[in-house]
Length: 286
Image (cartoon, rainbow, N blue to C red; front, side):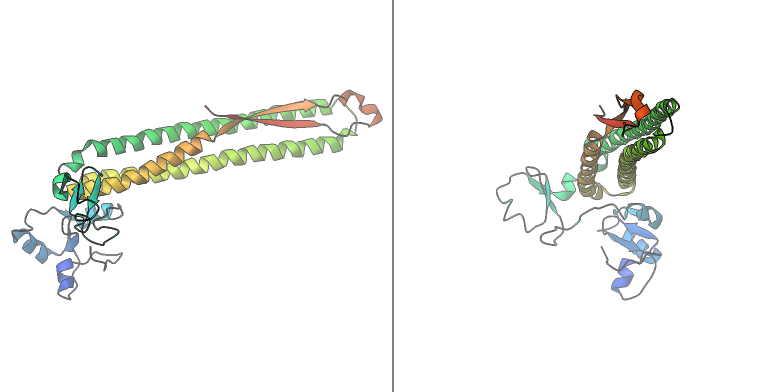
């Protein structure tokens, strides 16, 4: 792929080779370069490239961010072979070294045949869809938990205030102390809840983007692009799924409970120094 790509347009590759600049109107998914109108005609007339798949620049923009490796990371050579035993795309340098004893190394084009219709692409798309549904369920659960926190805090506040009306002015300071504890506990629980919501939202955004990339790749990429890009996307998706599972498994609900001081009825002598205690129990979400 040419390195000279401007954000506002895609240059024509053959024209750049001739040291001229023309904006591309088509993109060749096999040659991995843009073509202006004149070069497109030549491309279609040439025997070696007339069967190449051309897409519009608008369609190319939809898949240009999809991570598709065409060259070997170790040798910077074109990936031309595929080892079935190791499920790995190879450059020519690998053949006489690490894979010289492998008997099932085939051309990458043969391995990529009908990749867009492969079960792996369908399974990857399904894995994203299932995880997105689970994120929705967990997000709804966290929203419900947040409301329950508010409800419990409101009930405890009512108990505190009702108890406060039965005793004298000495309770003013103790009431304030306990209220601050309740506010602090409520904020702490809501903060934890909100952190999970932020994580779920971020994971949802990432998976939606990956889902769109899978669909766009399937729609507009060549079989070779799908075959190579799917493997890269699968790693990203599996990483996000594992990240989501870890986050989901670490969520918990909160149980608020008010424990009144046993000496609350003995306040006439101002001997009681604590109004009560706010207890919060974290229960792991099933």
